[in-house]
Length: 201
Image (cartoon, rainbow, N blue to C red; front, side):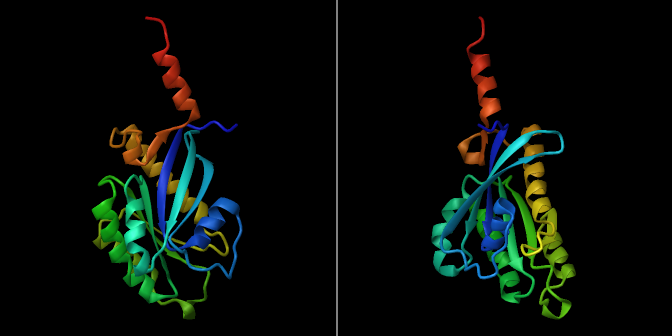
């Protein structure tokens, strides 16, 4: 049985191939669009050795699923707003996804802007890196990164950076582990809490 310090809930918008690469280390070119919500999880180790279990909900980007996916924003400690750099319309939808996160999620939720498919040739790119950086800067999103679910470039990094930022907020007292914050104590922390409660008077 794996031991871990925290469980952190993270949302991802409409890029199930990114989730698949992170959780299963594989890429499926024919991956269909997310329908409703998909789920995956994986254990990671932070730089200070803390063990984290990331639970990731990949939410559909289509307007028809918006009312369903909005409910998943509540109780999320992190949110990845992902667009496809080869499809400008997905970048244009980023402002809508951001507004939904800020309306429905915890005000301290860590938000990361992600431009996916950075492996594509320059002529296929419809959104420049500079545009992504500007969007993040204009909307006070501190973390921006381009990834490739196909080559796995920066996929590990984007999830680990999200978890690191959430963990920093736990240490600073911004987040306390409970269901509404999207963070729960893991097996090692729960065992320690039980031991302290059952100690000598």
